Image (cartoon, rainbow, N blue to C red):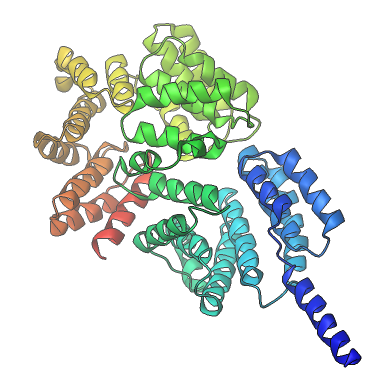
Length: 490
């Protein structure tokens, strides 16, 4: 009897220690929140504390990787990326030694591969990214089969579906090679399910970040993200990542004033680390409103940000600021900065560099109209065009075409039927020109027909969009057209 009791007691101890491999205790719950709030120093201290008091808790390695992932994303530093890759190997090694029966066993490994794929993609290491997308997808599908009721699976299933659709067309062969595939619609649905299931859990903040990111970048409906943010608990808006995504959702929903007020308030009152991109976003939003202090925030971004993204774009916006305020000397200085500083690292940077090197002189009226439109001030933008209607008959083809294009965009936003007429005219007159006006007009026409459920015409213009050549905004327009074809085929 005594031996039997010892055996049972030993089994209980072993069983307890095995399943303690993934222990979401109070310290770990706090650490997870701190990572998502970008409180890296606090999170690191808690991780070190967990190592001392609970060294068998494999969540330590999951958190270390997640912390390194967010550090790299927010710093945009290649040095951080190389350091991350080394840490990833050690963290994965330790997670592979955890309890294989736990739903977190494959899930955490899949998430590490997913995080690595995202960073590899960001730093244009597409072969490495494709491999890790493949590993993440394989592991999470296996985990779903073993643990179908483990709702966290849906975060990765949905995210992988979306990100695979972001792989540049030149590298699609890698996705085919590794047999990875995904759909935007199913990706969104998976993340919506993850959000619904996580509302009363520690994963709620993470689910909001992932779903709002998906709404921002993968859904055409301009107000879907904005509506979502107005449905969630407002306490979540204190998170720095969610704050940024909310401001971007406001801008996408043509609520530029609200975005400006929110980011101003966030920068003045937040208790969490500030994402430097917030300065760029605020400067851009203020420039779209033609504010006299827009330059302050663009300069703050350039002075405080140590990464490679949006440097050329910031100098371009500073140049525009000085141009519309008739400070032509500073305009020239900043246009030269676009040419000589920063990197062609994002679509905005690439476009800034192309525009800075074009021979055509920027028309100040068209620039103001463009900025007002981007801020959602459609009536003001239209009024400005009507007051300067001679531009529509300009001998400079670039200007006359842009004039019609701006009218098309404004009429589209104001739900006027004339938008179709203007878009078709832009396609006819501008399809051989290197700018993006004709290509984006085809995309916008397709979106109009899609909203009218005329899928035949929508497909025609999505395909026409893909056929029209452009050296401006090519990647983002191509992506949206392919996403549109993906949607209407479902």
